[in-house]
Image (cartoon, rainbow, N blue to C red; front, side, top):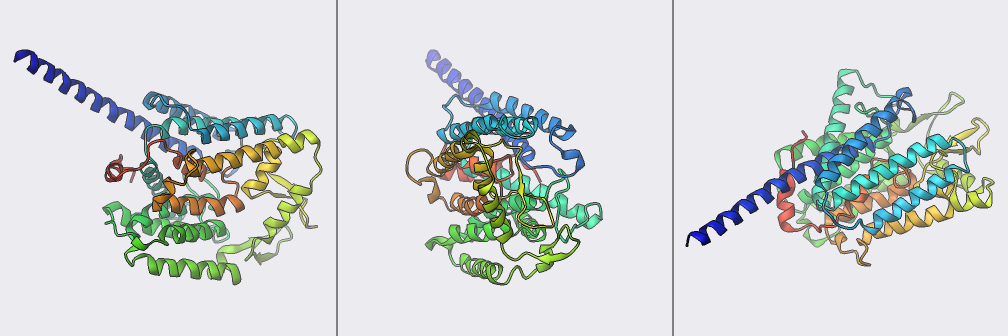
Length: 415
């Protein structure tokens, strides 16, 4: 009898130790994920130039995230999707030897690889829905701080657009993280779930962040992601007006330009102002990028991640930034890198099993609906960006379950 009691006591102690160890592991992975998201934001301004103090700070934070993720990791094989993106990064690094500014290209490639390594350890121990909830909370804090700084006058609007405050970043990045976070929180509510106390405020902040950012790509990608996620029978009526507003927004943007057209005012090098209601400027840059002369090795391996501009087809400026993930991938990593990026993207969507099982989850489906159009018009997958962690979250090795969804709101509060 005493032996049985002793064995039972040992089992309870073992279970308690395992529970404590699991909680510590979850905390390490959560903190590593938060740091990874923060360092994925491209910082803007003179102090954020690659190779400067900001780059060193990013590397230090990413190293800390790697230590935390390594401490909390689970011993599982890395997903093939992450391996494919690491191959893309290696090809882009080799292409850097063939292009200008090899040092900058090497820095970008190293950060890209570091973010993927951290993410590979994190997604092995946490499910996709929980990772996206953490992403939404980080986005809420970031957008909320930027909006508050704007109201206090320390983060003034430039050309009518909201810039990130801490860290300083371009409005397109503000719109991207706000749009993805908005989909993550809004879709469960539209399907009938009750909002947590922090989520109602978050939805208001994130909606304001998407609009005031003035990012056409993020606005359209958010609307498209919501449409894709909510076209299901289980929207319980709440999704109908949302779908109507999204379709109306897409139509207005496509035919007339954004009704808040003051957000789209651009100042050209000639000192004039114009409203760009289409994406023709980017499509012209894509054509120019494809037609740029390159050697056979550059066609295969690209010119490195430092290449972010192409000769302009217009007479009033010599070069323009190159946007568009897939076109940029071809310029930076060539045909081989482009193929590796495409394979990795497909593997993320299919979880490497050949079936879109994870996309049965409406939240994950909405995120995919955002990432696909956003990757066409922005460099969101082929370089370090705030969209990349959301894509990596889709590759979590643990599928979401009802138990996981119930645990998702219990992650450490960030706001």
